[in-house]
Image 1 (cartoon, rainbow, N blue to C red):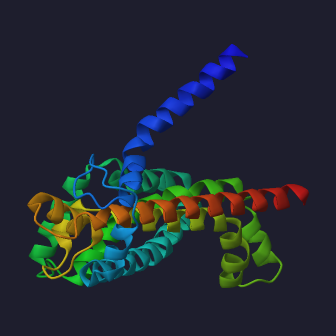
Image 2 (cartoon, one colour; image 1 turned 60 degrees about the vertical axis):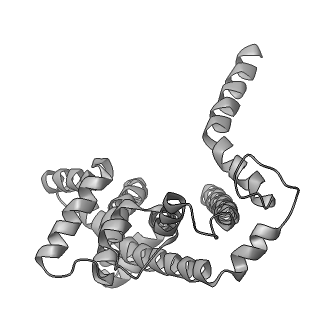
Length: 265
C-alpha cells in the first residue's frame, strides 16, 4: 500500500514539474496584467483582445493552414514509406528504417541549416515551397514511427491472401493494409500537426519574409517586448493547450473503443 502511494506521488510530482509552467500561463490568461506574476483581478479581457486582434487571427490562420497541409502530405508520404519498408526484404528494410529515423535523433538546428543551404542552391530559399518541404522533413519520420508498429502487429500474409482472393493490388492496399494501420496513421497525422504547430527553428529558416506563424510571432513579440499583443498571447497559448488536451483525450477514447471492438471479435 505504501509503495503504491509513493509511486502515485512520484508520478504526480513529475507531472506537476512538467505542466506547472503551462498551468501558470493558463491561470494568468484570466487577468489583464501585462506581466506574469501580477494579478489585477479575474477577467476574460485577454480573450476578447485576442479575437479582436486581426494580426493574431491572420497568423493563427497561417499556422493552422501550414500544419494541416504539412500533416496531410507528411502522413501520405510517411504511410507509403512505412508500408514500403514493411514489405521490403530484411536486408533492405533495416537500413531504410534506420535512415528514416535520422531526422528524429538529429538536432533540429542542423536540419534547418541544411534545408536553408539546399534551398539557397536551387533558388527556392524562403518560399512557401521551402516552408512546406521543411515541415514535411520534420514530420514524416514521426509518421513512419507511428505506422510501423501497427503494420508489425498485422499478419504479413494478409496482403497476399487478398490478392489470391481476387483483389487488385490497389484494393488490397486500401481495404486490407490501410484499415489495419489506420490508428497508427491517425496518430502520425495528429503528431505531425502538433510538431508543425509549435515548430520555430525550421520555420524561421525556411519561411518567406512576409509569412509568420504563432511560434515566430511569439518569439519576435517577446524578444522586442514592445508589441501590445503580447498579453493576449497568454490567452492564445491557453486555448491551444486546451484544444490539444481535448484532441488527445478523444484519440485515446477512440483507440480504446477500437481495441474493445477488436477484442470482442
